[in-house]
Image (cartoon, rainbow, N blue to C red; front, top):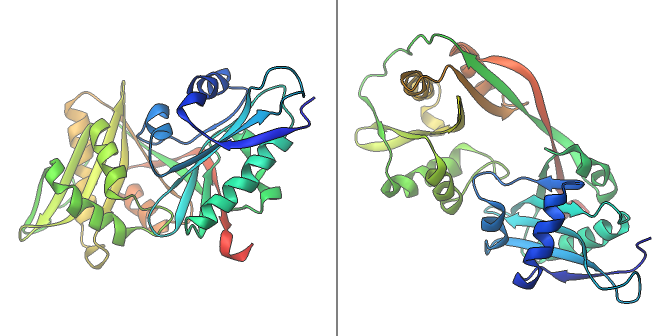
Length: 291
């Protein structure tokens, strides 16, 4: 039984042990988005800690748990990596969170989010002070698509990496701190995207979409329009462009995720022919300033 552990920062020397722990998939949390696991472990903004069984408490010292959170802009962090060995007790994970929380506070993080993709992690969250504050819901589009009405003077074109600064600026003002992505994150997304389209008015980028494709399924991963131009049909044109592009590739099913409380985006997707599914992922958050 695991009764004594040592918490240390993740280092390259722990790489093999952490990979094996994650590969076992016994008690696992992975929220990787567009980066690979190795990409996150090497990311400078990831604070990752490992718990080792202390010498003399069960043979050779080895990694029994890991926990990592990525610090983003706006005083926000997401818990990206978590795992606990099947034979280990939860106190190892609790010890990791206690130290990780202190590290996040030291980095100026005010809010931590957890996307409970693997429901296992939810068992620990209430004791750590997290509350379920939202959910990510999925919409699906199948079959034919009725193109959106054109917006006068709006130009849609394929994005290039030179557009990333403008795309990041739109993302920053279109989303709240918990949901926005910085230029580095968007650059990672750009590398795996099936489609990135920008919308221009008078030569200025005012919105964008970023979509991915997995086998026979398309996914609208990101959609943003400058707030003062929302409601004028720009978002509809971008969504329509995505559906047309996927249809031309023979893709007949396209999904999109949005927040449960984002009724504006839900109405947009429903107008474009998307239907809600039963798929929902809980979002847990913790305000570090209040704890």
